[in-house]
Length: 416
Length: 69
Image (cartoon, rainbow over all chains, first blue to last red; front, top):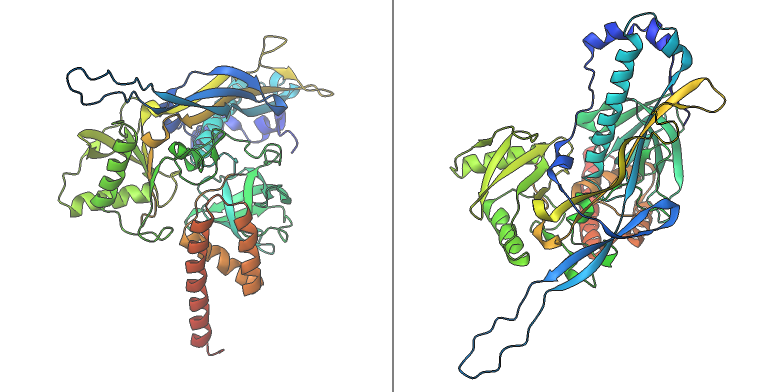
């Protein structure tokens, strides 16, 4: 994908400042879920391929257990220390760039034409980065934005399982779901998204004949490879899960304490009604598995939040709203284990699923500098080779992990 | 590559889409390939079997309804 330069014609022909008044400047908003997580401390750095920093994450697997009933003159019990294992976490690099021509800077006559546009583009970029991050926070770490249900080459459309992470203007590649992913279509420009039907329309009559069901959509150029199967930060899809795969470098089959507490419906994979018993059973399992650590919030899809509201109403429970506070959105309230939990339904939330998250065990890890790359000149403006044009690169390194896996829970198969 | 947990509705969507261009053999082949990368094989097999049975029953009844059977 080539740079899309901000050029002088964009400023003079489109009258950007007039355009600003009608279209909200901040198309993408900051996402609060990222802010919710505490920051974890990184130790024991090493470097993996392609400059990925690898850190050791301490996983506590038991507490002191040397407490026994005793009698007079009984030998004192053997001490039983807490046990630990060591997980591994790679920091993932997220990069965004904006580019503009010399003319757009020096020949603009309006007093603030360039500055206004620049401000919009750069701030929009940062918000897009955080918006994408919130998408990755739902996923499994592969960075995919949607899964193909079917493709229609004639109509230039792809129907996804869910189009909630796709926006107009994105440029996407399609790769199959193989262990060595194969490209099926490239540089598809999103023209329009029919969200209720999960249909994505592409411009420029692309060839979609090779796009198969179960393939995945990625931002162009950011697809996974055999060497880099997980290009994006890990999300709730893998952190709060109980499959037999590897998590933080440890097999969940071998080390069962690496599994989060997950509860399916009566017939796993088939959605069924949300009930108090289902919520309570999950909560009890979490409390027992995590030595009393309980969830601090519930994160779900907007439609499941609605089902939760209906459940409260039908059970005759008081329906209370948690107010918008400290950067967190408004939500419903659930009292569980004597604790008040906000329940947030989000448009990006995984469908049919509720995540019960423990704040002190769901951590974000960052490294290096977060911000505009200013190496060399000290300025974020970098001249582009062979052109009198400039670009600014915003980047940061981040990943997420639940360090006491059983302190986080997940309720699957909820009817929406 | 990690993959999200998929439910019956999602499998039905995919099976329907494969049946539009292919047949039941293509459905089975696709699932066989998908299963190779799965970390939750028993779950996937049971959900796929349920989705497949549902879709095939739906297709059969649609055919009968259209008088094509």
